[in-house]
Every structure is written in structure tokens, then in C-alpha cells.
Image (cartoon, rainbow over all chains, first blue to last red; front, side, top):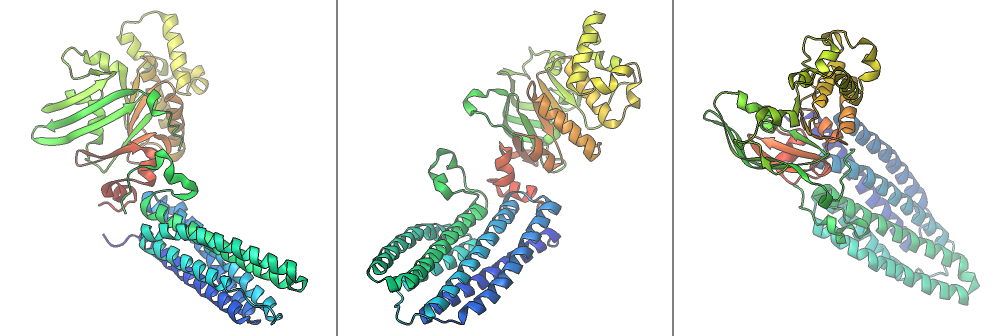
Length: 231
Length: 261
């Protein structure tokens, strides 16, 4: 039998999601670069990219709903489609955080006296690597990689707390710094959310490929110790 | 999915099938099938044509005995007693384990006479008691209200879904414990199918149901447990929700996602 129409449409959806993920990755890298360079013009480009991502989100969601309605998929196909809808949503939100970061870069550009904390690029590097690995695991089904992303989320959370402490101290010492300090806190907060969403994507990747729910500590519960599904 | 999976420890197995082989002459139609049917649950058997699911269903009330050249090996326990034991009365077994067929098959009699047919054959003559049971059975099959004013009408004039529900009522009149359904909706349109499915969900409160269906969505909608069969073997058996969302065998995945064949 030739490839079924359903599989052709499913492949198209998968490719579109990968394309969207690539665009989101480019947007995040662009925004982080903007922070590093304090590029005031970066926000505009980021907004244009985000518009494209938003458009793709709607297309992907509609395609997934249509496939479910028309074909009533089951098992791996169903897990993929439900996971695709969630990842689609996660990616769109990551895009929004990217825009926020680019806008923060514009704010910082007006304050040449403020040094960007070294912890922020470090945190950004971690969040971006998590995003990249989560998308890789979604495509390949590499559950080790996906689980590894989840453990890195704790590091990002710690870095965020650390940045918060340092910035708060600066703000208390120098009231002039408050406005820039708030911006830096927002950048850290956006990066932390990107890392959280990358963790979500990794958890979805494991569910799609292996049928296992690992979020919210579900794996530690006794009923989760079922057999692995076919992959 | 309506499956309310109660605590496994309080559910008892109504039927237990152990290493069941069945041969039609030289042809082996069932190969070492193991399966448990839990009480007050709906168990669905799915699989491609000729996989043995109807054969397995018919083993549960020994309908296969009627086919010449059939040999059965292994055990089918109903409430822990082997139904293939020589001491078993087949007529009594079929009263306990009744069957609804693919096409509605009411007798060419009135609606009322259809419902009480089994009771009369069993020797019941008490008219008041017959009427009572007929009403109870028709009510349980959701036919009392639409049909109470025309109980003397010929059953064959009813629409197909009512005919099928009349067959269910006829079965309920003899107070079975298990109801076997062999593609009970394949001759029915979607609305009529929905009514039978709703009826099944109602009936499982009192009875244990085993259904063979070609309609996978039907199995997913109504059953608590699903068995996937292929070439006479039970490939995978488990809770319906698991089988349809995360099957453990590649063969099952291929079948329920439509990649098989």
C-alpha cells in the first residue's frame, strides 16, 4: 500500500512544527544577541519574526484538529497529534518571551552605564541549549536527552534566584539602577520561562515517543511503572 | 471512554480462558488464547476479519459445538467451573451466557411472544408472571415506552434498531449473567448504533458483556477492556484506554492506527 493520505498530512504537520521550532530558536538567539549588544533595533525584527510564528501556530493547530476530526487517530498517532498541539502552544509562548527579551534590550540600550550581568548570558546559553535539546528529543525520541533537559531546569531556576539577589542588592545601593534592574529581572524571568517551556516540550517528547507521563513527578507513582510502548 | 476502572482487587473474573485452542478440522482457528473477562465490565474483541474473534466469542457459550468437526482444547471457566466439562448442561449454559447477533433476528411472532419465548420454552405458563418479566425486559432494553401499546404487533415490522433491542430484551427475559454480542451494530445506522451503545453501558451495571466489533471507535467508546486478535492469537489484552493510547505491541499499534494490511 502506498503511503496513506493520513500519513502524508501527518508528515506535513511534523515538518511545519519543525520549521516553526527553527524560527523560534532563531528568534531567541536573536533576542539574546540583542541583550549582549544592547541593540535598540532588535525589537522590531523580533516582532516581525513573532508575527510569522503566531501565524504558523494557528495553521498547525487547525491542521492537527482537522486530522483528529477526520481520522480519529489512535495510539502513537494520537499521542503525536495531542503532543504537537501542546508543543505548538509552548513554542508560541517561547516566541513571546523572545520578543520580551528583545524589547528589554532596547530599554537597556538607553542605559549605557549599566553592565549586563555575566550571569544573564550564562543563563541564556543554558535556556537556549535546553530549547535545542528539547526540540531534538521531540524529533528523534531520544528520551535520555529529554530527561537531561528536565534536570537542567533546576540549574536555570537557581541562576534566576541568584540574579534576582544580585540585582536587588544593586537596586538597594543605587536607586538610579532600579529601572535597569527591573529590566534585568524581567530578562531573567523570561529566560526562566523559556527553560520551563523547553522542559514541557521534553516531557511531551517522552509521552509522544514512549507513552510515559513524567511531568509533575508522575513517574514516581506506582501506576506509572507500566511497559514501554512500541516506538 | 466510559470505563470506570475500579480497584482491581474488588473485581472478580466472570470468565477465565486458559490456553484455548480451537480447530475447525485441520485448521487451527484459536491458538493458546488466554483472557479474563471481568464481571460488570464490557470486554471488546477487535481484529481483522478471520482473526478468530467471533470464534472465541462463540466458545464462551459453546455455540461452536453446533459446527461439525470442531475440536476445543484448553479451559473456559465461568465462575470457576469449566464450561466444557461433560457435566455441563449446554442449554443451561446458554441461558446464563446469551448472545446477540450481527443482524437482528426476532422470530416471526408478535413483540410480546418474542420476549417471552425463552420462558415459555422453559415451561413457564403463569400469564401474570410472563407479563411482569416481559415488561421488565422491555424496560431494560428501553423498548417499553415506545412499544407498550403495540405488544401484539409483528416484531418484524419494527425498525432495525428496535428489532435488535428486542433481541436484547428476549435475552434478558431468561435472566442471563453474560451477554455476548457479535457485531451487534454492523447492520445499524449511526443513530441506532449510538442507542445500542448507550444500552450496553446501562446493561453492564447488571450484566457482564463481551462484544466483537469491527468498529474500533466503538470498542474505544464502550469497552473497559480490549483484546486484539490476529491469526487466532491474542496479541494484546488490556484496559481499553491503554490499548488505544499506548499499546505495547507493534502489531496492535499497526492495526489500531490503520497501518495493518
